[in-house]
Amino acid sequence: MFIETQAPQDALIQQLLPIMTQACVILREEYQAYCSGQAFDVERKSDDSPVTQADFRVNHYLTEQLQRISDLPLLSEEGEQTERSTWSTFWLLDPLDGTKEFLHQRAQFTINLSLVEGAHTVFAMLAVPEEHTLYICPKVGMPLKYDAQLKTWFGYVAQDKHTDVQIGLSHSRQQKAQYQEFLAALEQFHPYTTFQAGSAYKFCMMLEDKIDIYPRFHPTSEWDTSAGQCLLERIGGGLIDFSGRAFIYNQRATLLNGGFLAYRNDQMKRLALQALGRMSNMH
Image 1 (spheres, rainbow, N blue to C red):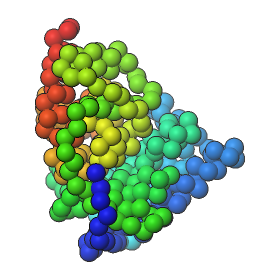
Image 2: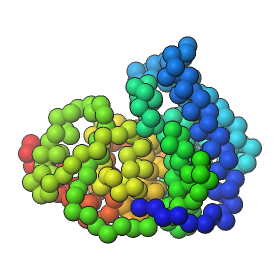
Image 3: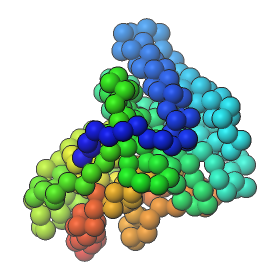
Image 4: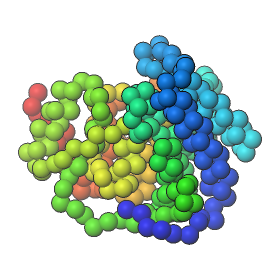
């Protein structure tokens, strides 16, 4: 949970806050245009996933602004990716995570920005434009939340453990059988409720104590998980592959991730791995 706190005296946050706040303004403008039925450009990528004029507009703005404040390279879903093997420190960006949520007029889309050093994320911002909210993982210390409407800061405080286990699921789950098998296996160990939400938005809901475990059995890319993983690890949670290894970044030929388990604390990690083990034994 988050409680009100003082504004951080962190130079990187102070640099990035107005930039990310304006990126949210741009994305809200695009969303309002789309929802009002204005002419709106939607294309299909080679993998048949949608990309919109909103993706490109936010990407263009953030690319320009990051170049203005930093000489670090940028690895973006909508940008150039061919030289990344030579980068040890770089920005990682998804200008619109949850394009399908956007197109279905569900406001659970985000802007994901993180700073990767070596193979690990050291700083992250996850913005929820329609909620005027930014979740920030500073280089040191617990996550922060900023309400851009109220101009109010909040700091993360661990909450007492609750008895309910809440599982985060996507609205449209591909390969649905795997999710049903995971839930059936989980039920052998603990009752649960489900919470449906957009992709990276689920990481925000984990920080808000609304989701404990987020299983993912269909593909994501590195810009989908980096910011959320950084935030979760800072509060004692994490994101691991099905062998129990934490995700690392920009270390492979592909930017595609395999399946993962995201969890809010060690207790939820053990429960998620138990369910995954039981699920494997069912085959």
